[in-house]
Length: 125
Image (cartoon, rainbow, N blue to C red; front, side, top):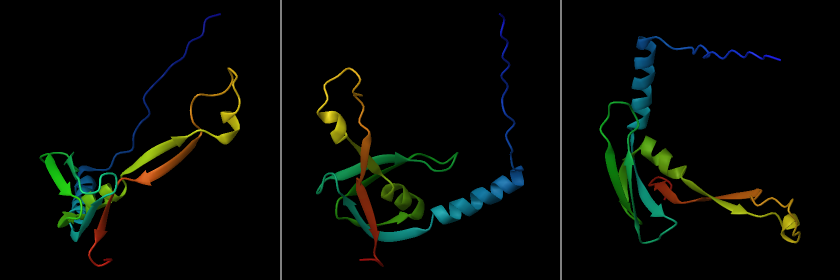
């Protein structure tokens, strides 16, 4: 039996270049708003965090170094990025821990997320 399958790319809906420029301009304005606050590195208190960051195409790559407990001004986009940085901790379910069979899955089923870093604005402090 011969089976023929045909695959094609799905047409993507795209905005006009003018609309795209307006959307990027609006996003850049929101992203660049400066916020003053305190940086906390929860994973390594007393340490520092250094990372590369580029939000928009064509921008140069920024290397940002933040020290735990430092009060600084950062753009709102980077603040959102920092506050959404989480690590996933995997835990095995209690039901499968006592069983020793081949059918016991080796991958954990329970996940817990913990925040790695925090940027708290000054108006909250």
